[in-house]
Image (tube, rainbow, N blue to C red):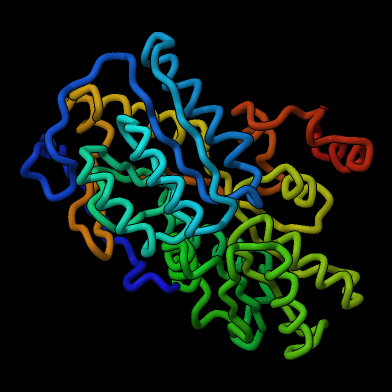
Length: 365
């Protein structure tokens, strides 16, 4: 299901007004709570390893630390099934969680459940993806910037050989994820007029196998030797794209983008199979989301306002208090200063026996 209006309008404000019962974006007035709170966490899928590996444990640990060990996180992952996520959200309403962090499978379809949570007096904070319905706040990365970084990286990889006749394949994300439209818009702002978008796909459920099938179609249409670069919206799909290219007999892979800094992608960057990924500080996003949830439900409005100084518009809500976290292009040159320095991976995680020589060449020890 396509999102009716996926572009997010962002404006910066010196500070957001205190949320109260009159705000169009907050649940009915909820009494301030103590440390004995339950945060409902709804994450969208498992194909992307970040959700179980980073987001959930970071949020869980942060909620516990903010509440002196008294708070807890009730966690559910929808496995890319929108109907399942709707049931999970309803279960959390029935369980009377205090606040919800929602990373929607389908940002449009989940709106009725968001309304049910509001009617039950449970605030909903959209996490990573901008859900429709009466959400109280939103935290994500600057999604158009993600696409811009990916687009610029393609042009950088092509170097002095850029010309409008060069053919690019665009492998966009799922139409049910509003972030995908923003990534695409950001990438096109860099690529349009400089190269030819020969084939473009929206990839169902972000699944690597769907990206691989789409890439196979693109190769058949364009020719395996006529693809200058591939825009892949995330790392999982980049893996499927590489499989399709190699199955077609491509020995020298074109520059391929990605996003999420998955371990396999970092290793592909080291080996030269994938040109770049977009590194997003999951600890920063996840910890801030936990801070927002706890501050909001405990009625600490000044802290909550300080965490939500941006404003965004969803297709159903205007001026949603938000925080947009910046991102960085991850290439061979900065693996050490990003994912290793931030503790996402150890050198030993990345530099397995298969990648020893490439790691040594990059000074990763």
